[in-house]
Image 1 (cartoon, helix red, strand yellow):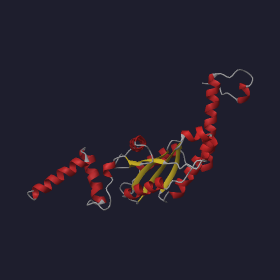
Image 2 (tube, one colour):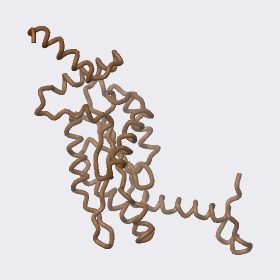
Image 3 (cartoon, rainbow, N blue to C red):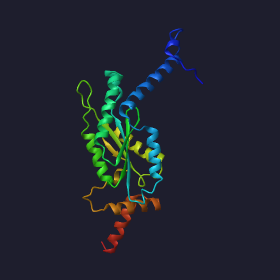
Image 4 (cartoon, rainbow, N blue to C red):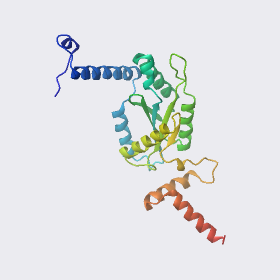
Length: 240
């Protein structure tokens, strides 16, 4: 186990590489705690514990919608580099307060770590409405750097009991969506399964989509394949 290095000790002898690593680690930990203290948000461990408890509850039987969103600040490293870590901390705090202010009552906001925030939505709000809220959250983001430059957010979204039923898999799906959004240039919101985003103006009801998702999961077949099969049967019925 590495010996804990104090700043006083380093003045009594030459500073080694390990000293630098330890002091840098303590500095980063201090900065992390400063942002967490200012925001007062639950952290990444709380996010895991809360989501696991929700997934193990009877919320699916109650018909509740459970959605997670991972929100990442785009190109945050340049802020610390160009303006310093104090400005970076302020930007993170302002971002967290913005998300918290806009979040609906059935949502809980977390600071996952670094420049990433998380939201757990649990209630009767439809998934489509959550998607639209997150899109507005991204589009109306108004936090700026000292030079007045506008900043952007990227969001990955996943839905419990549709995209996954276990914590690790659900987070992996949301993180994968976040990664794809980043690869597209950021300032986007991407769902774990984009093909499932069907507008209310479509010919499918939410109940039909949920039943289709359950059937696809039970049979281990993609939803698109099932829909094509159903359409073929319909066309044959009417001899088309």
